[in-house]
Length: 472
Image 1 (cartoon, rainbow, N blue to C red):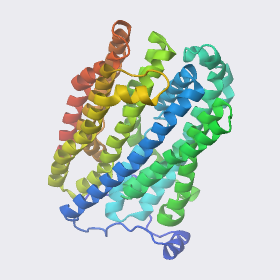
Image 2 (cartoon, rainbow, N blue to C red):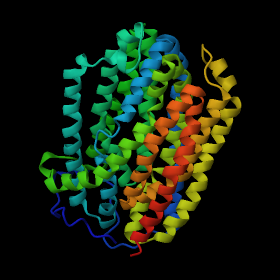
Image 3 (spheres, one colour):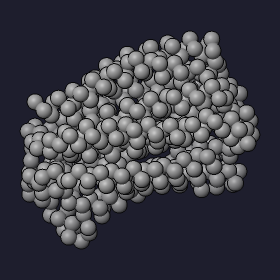
Image 4 (tube, one colour):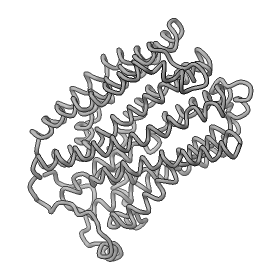
């Protein structure tokens, strides 16, 4: 069993208020210190239940965009919808705004759960919230101070009515995103304490809430920005309720409080999180650059032609993430207990499962996607070559994802960082050339080829390195 981080002070006296709350409500207790690893079948059953819950919650989350897409596309129009898609790409690019603290928190909490160390876990949680709020809130204030000086229409190549709305659309989407950064930490805590099913349900609720809010705005004939705002604010509202419920009833002993903030804990989270931050920064810049590249090479109308099918495939990618992300804390527990055989066996099985999760719906989308878009949307969108490229992209990501979870659980981050540092410039250059000479459909194929030559070998090496560290 891995010892707690010596840089982080341990204080075993339980907080009186938390202890009292613990007597009043049911809390989730970790295994006793020194307890043997749970039997593999138990882990397997738990993982299967998490996967089933992830599939169910993702299905709910995927249905909502299917209903909203034709409504929002008709209401906003092609140019404004393309502007909105480009702004959302920017929010994807700044997904690293918590500097990797959330991912570092999930990695650090796994051994705390194994050790039954509530005191250290509580200080990590409080320190994480303090660190993330210290980044997100000032950034949000700065956005509103300088947002009026940014040439948003030029940034997104917006013209006409879309240019008039560029400033407001950017402020609404970026503000909602920044405020949601600290609120989303609750999902990291839930995953670390293996409350994955509950977390998946809350994530599905965030998507479901956007449906009545957006439809209400459309039926009330509110301005287009109100429709965009209703969708942007839904995850924020649900995460507020989830945070109150989790720390008020489910895990009150981990409730963040200012007196538990620890400078050494913040430094530790920033140290580990800094590596996650760099990986996430490079990864999201590469993965979310497509709409901006397309906007400048081919125009906003081409962004819509790409973004609509890409958004549908993104729902598939979210399902792949939900299937694999529970492996992160589970592998952290297994590595802390030295159960490497279970890790290897699970990675082999989950590679097959994750790939099938991507292959089956991708095949249906490629086979029937053109007819589906023609019957579903008011304007022609998508072609089979683009759909096949998007399918190949997500299948490759699904196949390699289980190995990333082992590296993340072990804190082995540098190999994937080097892989993405190679992938980013090569993919951007390749896509610029491909978009210019071949058109919008070329973007995912170029991404697949370069990713397979850079990130995939790094992922395989990093996975082997993570296992080697646990055997030495």
